[in-house]
Length: 173
Image 1 (tube, one colour):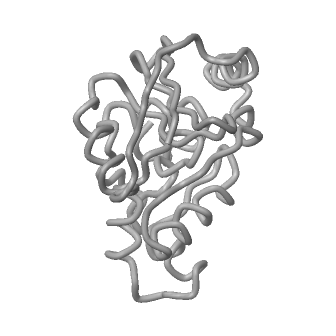
Image 2 (cartoon, helix red, strand yellow; image 1 turned 45 degrees about the horizontal axis):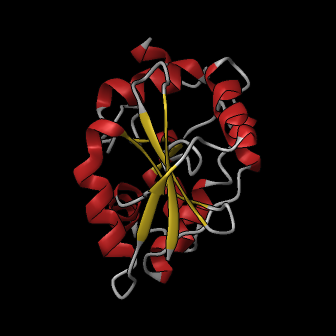
């Protein structure tokens, strides 16, 4: 698989954008999580050989990411994605994409939405394995009691992102 890697500066730290040859996002992750990126690529595409070249991000992608961080919290929704992973993970990740910007869901609500109301832990594991931060908005999933739970990008970033989107639970403002 031929991939292109771009680096972008964001208010939450520098990020890596990995696109396939059809310009679908395969991974969007913070630079300080390079090891996570490497692990996710191997895990989600176990029988795939990669060639990765670096280049500047396409203008439309750079523009959408900049617009998101400048306050257009729905700007990332139009970016095309392609995900590896198991069929269950893909179901969870597709459901994550239905959470509107500015809203949150609990793990239980997300599990119920995909037809597995008792699968909160499995949903949490799939959520944690999401390789496409922000665009597949796993940061919008919170605990049933409104608390912030784990986040692959770090809790400080999750707090920042939810505050930025205007969806941080009142008790955490």
